[in-house]
Length: 154
Image 1: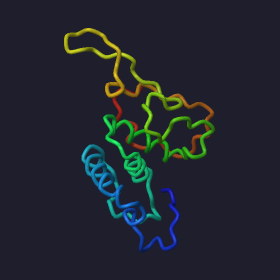
Image 2: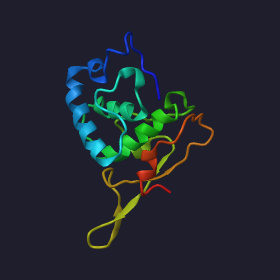
Image 3: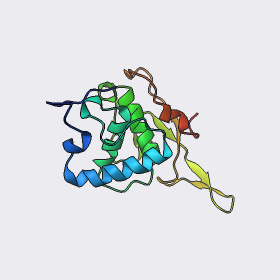
Image 4: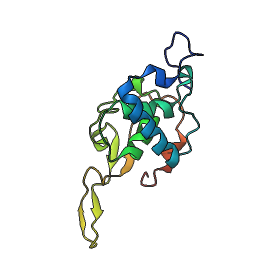
């Protein structure tokens, strides 16, 4: 697991380290995501043991905006933190509020079927991760289990 900076890791929790205005979003996303994924952490996990999952939820909370693509964004965030994304050679757009399909190395579906069976261009909310292409980008670590739950990924 990752180590997060702390003066006294035995006493400090994640919630004690983030601004009050982020705590509500963090708790909301934590509840929503742990209901969808088997996240093996608790909300009061010591900050000295920040997992990629906790870091992923924190990154969502710090965006300060509603997210239509929370599950895909969470999976990509966990992937980023579990493979040392801060040290990738190219992490353009990663961990920003921009459309995940604009993140370096992320390819998404470009079309969807409409209710009447017609093919149409996908909106940002309809885009699904199709492929990750990050060759020779200094990834280091393990692939998080969440990545395997994205059924659209080939």
